[in-house]
Image (cartoon, rainbow, N blue to C red):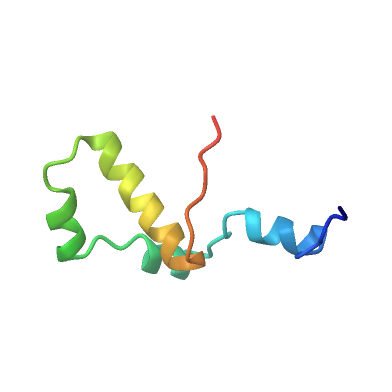
Length: 69
């Protein structure tokens, strides 16, 4: 059975790497709207940060990323 390459190595790296945001993009992606505030209201602080980060990165690339560390 042969390996099928769907993405080149470079495109795979671009797909796998989280986006790098400029200042304006960062402000837009991680904005805490009233809807977000309602969702995170009863979360503990670490869960709030995780939710906001995952939401921002998902909005930017339409997928979730694993945390390393």
